[in-house]
Amino acid sequence: MNTTGKTILLAGGAGYLGSHAAVELLKAGHRVVVVDDLSNCQQNKDDIDDLPPSLWRVKQITGKECLHFVRGDVCDKERMIDVFDTYNIDTICDFSGKKAVGESTKIPMHYYQTNLNGTMTLLRCMKEYGVRNFIFSSSCTVYGAPNSENLPVKETDSVGACYCPYAKSKFFCESLLEDMSAGEPDYWRIVIMRYFNPVGAHESGLLGEDPRGEPRNLMPKLAQVAIGKHPLLHFFGDDYPTADGSPIRDYVHVMDVAKAHCNAIKKLETIRGIRTYNIGSGKGTSTWDMVRSFEKACDKKITLTIVPRRPGDVPEIHCDPSKANKELGWRAEKSVENMCEDLWKFYSLNPNGYQDSSALIEAVLPVEY
Image (tube, rainbow, N blue to C red):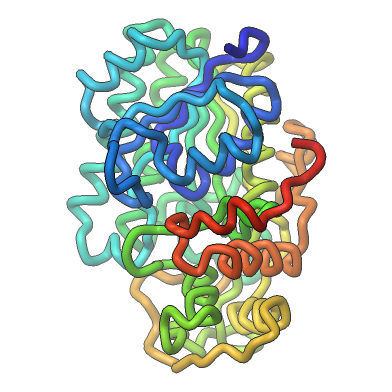
């Protein structure tokens, strides 16, 4: 059992971001406890008490035994009390909640109920058990649709003019955290991380993005078209007021995002109150450019069809990450080419996602693990 690091609770940690963060946290010497209801994750067909496939692969990558899994809904306070009773939690990373922009416009009540209740339940339990350290997974969508003259966005820019229920749910949670910190500034140690567009996969090819059902994000859709799982890509809008007509986003490698959490945990040791950071590359890349980069990585032409814009999508956004660079000692290191190559490696080894055990044999793990 790990005795040198902290015990980190990853709420919703079996999903894409949480599982990659678990790799880096275990590597850094921490003990990791994951609570997830697996509503958006692949799961084992037989024993539901086993590690889900994503976390089983985390163990394969790291070789660490100090990874624990509890199947449960973060909104279920009784279940969370059991977790706090069982484990001496030091820090919580909140990856819980729904995260699809387009879907949130169709089922807004579900997004508000799940995303707000999950975070509030965690905070209630923290207060009851004397836990102070909290890292919240927020989103660049809280900035709304900034004018091109106001790019790149900074943490001090206005937020709240949100274009979809997902973004509003993140903004409401941020507001709650700010109020909690203002009310008890000497108690809470909170870091808000505004992710931009995490993509890619672990370089081993073992760990990647394998959502249940139809992917709702660009990159896994691209990959599934490339492996023949879907006949074509629906390209949402080519009439945006950008240079090539497609939306521009700040893509950041998921392993860079994962490493940011290790830096944030160190930051929590020295702060009181709340800090907010942009977690992005600082560079804008258009959807057309991402498609072309992925075509180069997989050496295939992607069949696509242009369809109308999705509700809630904004034309362009990218960030100024200098605050995270300076205060967290973190910066995005991997390129768009790395993102596409690593994603393609995961899907080429795992055409059926985590159900493909052959990847465990074929993947070559980095020496550092």
